[in-house]
Length: 275
Image (cartoon, rainbow, N blue to C red; front, top):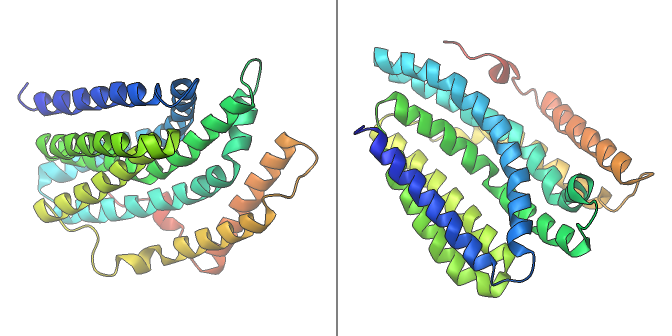
């Protein structure tokens, strides 16, 4: 019960934050709350599909390492997981940023879901997608804290994130509407990820050493090149909305992988972790 209490407090803070966000969105205009809710559903689908399998499988491995006091294994495991998260998320980020409207139209653009609803939902989705990497990193690190019998660390950072989110939402909603509220969530989430990584590095083991950027170099280069390609190709239309989205999604993913192959990226790091 003592260890569960911080988890309860952290979750309660998240629920309070959601209530306040909805209250602020209700002042933006008709359909704002619903549009953000729909965009959050799409974002959460992407983040959960990646984070849940990773954090579930990792919790077992990390608990074993923690029981042995093997911090070297925890460091190696987390370092590889961070890179795996970035590797998986970058093409999703690119796709959503350029084609959020197409995604929303394909999934929700039926019946009474009109053009304004599509516009608002796609704006929310484009802003939410910046939470993708922070959300997954936080999920993985939270499980790592739990494996080390520490439930207070994630709670403190989580409550701080909620306070920052609420403050930014109040400041930004009047200027940017939906983008202000969802953007505040993205900023707070990214800030909390940085704080959690720094806190874990200082309290337990330093995961990101001074040469961390070189380990991500190939993935960053592939993402930048794909972004440039999509910038020039985004307005090219192929047959219809569905074919256009599928073809471009497959194309950009293939280009992403091809660049990493040409850069001689070690894909074995993403496939198997040594226990």
